[in-house]
Image (tube, rainbow, N blue to C red):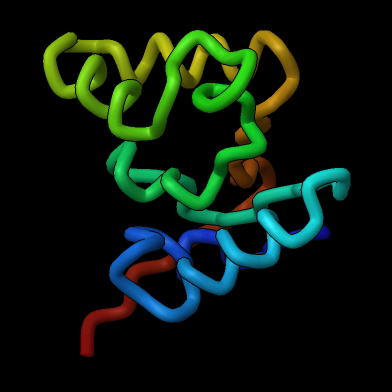
Length: 109
């Protein structure tokens, strides 16, 4: 299951889209999940729908989303460490557009 524009489901328990994303994942526990977003997560709270990353829940280091969020709120730089960990284990991929060969002109109106 691929969730394109996954950022639209942020704050999962406060909106219909987020709730639907969580419900779909719960209904299909064996499905492989891909979260796609050009904007990613600006706050950890935006990642609540991303339970399949393996950060919280049964067999994970943290028992719940709230437990991870609590640690991240108290530790400066923890979000960067989390992103590095996710990148290192292949759960997170970030790309940026190259500007090679691009020419720009400023036009005064």
